[in-house]
Length: 170
Image (cartoon, rainbow, N blue to C red; front, side, top):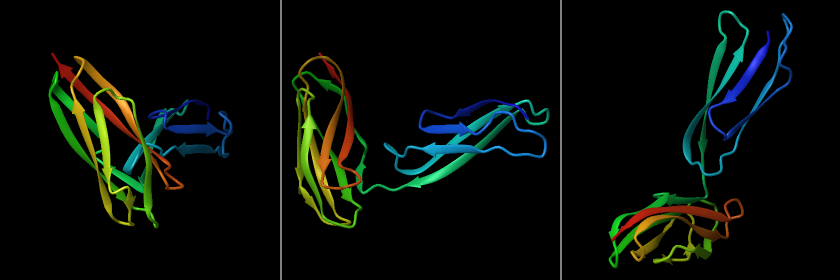
């Protein structure tokens, strides 16, 4: 068997084939790794193996994982769609502490013009939530595209990125 290609479904899976030529009655090995950063909940990925096998030249196998997070942000992004110049729009995000200890929101990085962020409370008990209030004032017409970064006390999730999208009308 000659393996001609190993293709993951996206860049978030990496594959390593021990040898691409496998003699009859022998076996090869394939290592698949998955970077769970930026994922939560059930995630399904696939890997396609192309070979010279006459009965199955393209073998696709899938795997599923359930990714848990300590700092759960819902929704995972802010959208300020069709904000008129000079007008204000406010959105809330729920930050839930799913870790086994108290979570502290240490700081917030925000470089988006016209966007102000407040979080209450900044200390979040286990299995409790805080509210992130995002208030946007449309200033310059055009697209909004950026990231608000939360810095937390969680050892596994020190940084939580919240994507921000939108559009300011004239």
